Image 1 (cartoon, rainbow, N blue to C red):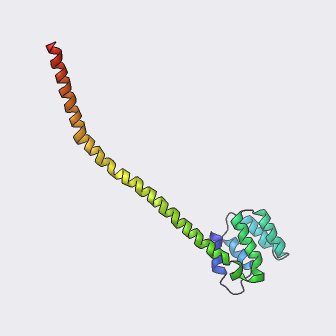
Image 2 (tube, rainbow, N blue to C red):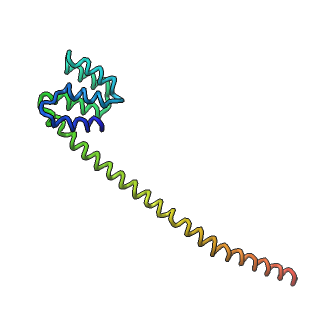
Image 3 (cartoon, rainbow, N blue to C red):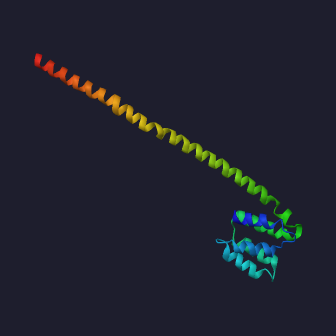
Length: 150
């Protein structure tokens, strides 16, 4: 997601090159840092081979799609090569929004249940429990009276 944000900013710059995008990706990279560093170092010798090796070294599907778009970047331009990236980001944001709404609804249902727990505790504690205790006391008194009669 971080690479997508960087590329979405860079793709609007006129004549942005593959090497520039690779350098920016390297600056923001943590997981793919070693592979990107190797690619940036090998890039001046053979750009296409360096990018192909990067795709082989890192088989992560979203990263591979970014590298494929990067390969097309010099041929068709950054705007056209990374055009799908914007729609991917919009879809990701919509999915994230739906997941957040579902999570909020679940938490809302749990909180509604938890709100009524003290009410039920009060009703049971102050109304039902004294009634049961009084009934049990009367029952014991009645049993004692029956035992004295017999």
